[in-house]
Image (cartoon, rainbow, N blue to C red):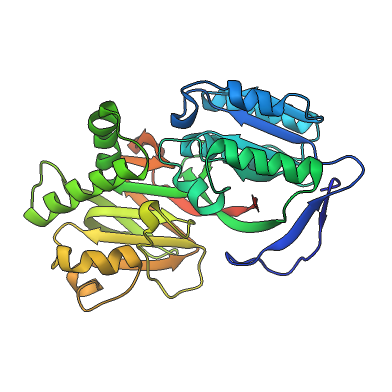
Length: 345
């Protein structure tokens, strides 16, 4: 990164990353991707555009779908952008990550700064800039062009999702199936349409599905049959309520529903379709702690992995985007696709 000075290259942790500052001479080239359809931008981009006006070496592109995001990232590569600011939701971040890890950069791929501009902004709440999208953008521009504030760089593994039969891989930070897929559909169709958004919408959806699962309501929370192969092992058939794989440390409402002790970069958690003591186990699950209620013999599994393989015929989500599986493409492979650098201010 020729327009950044990185003052410490020690391994990064969530609490302490290396210090990063722009060079005094030119400052960084910044590329901003704004999704006008994301939850935080639906009232318009005028405020964002006013803040960017007059800032030198800023390339601002609007992008709604993955094709437009990919075109914007290619444009950033031509402009030798050092920092990509994502002004959109989790789905926009997913599209940006896929583009970043697909394009061959002449030097090093840009760092990322994520604004909370989505309906849920789960990824930005974990590795993005705190505060509203305008607050985060204002601090970022003040740091980049006036030297205000101290920034750090945090590295985080990125999830790579690829079909067995050679379809273009996708990149993101959160995969979910079973009740997670059903819950997102319910939230989109029944909660967001009533004007409820953010973590409140996710919390209400979680409460509904948790109570339905505890009552054994299979119409609300149907069991999902998935074949699971962990770390190159043979495929094991499993009926689950929920299955998730993520590189995030924190999900919505601060949940950390994983408690594996291995060293792998992927957090994997599955809840079988007939778990015992679900309501009693829930507090431990949300905090990511093993307890007398939340363990394998009661139907709760969690590991840290390097890779896994899924035979899945139902829908799944990657960073909030909904996908349908295609049996013709074979099994689904999940692994670490590398690391991305996230700017913190």
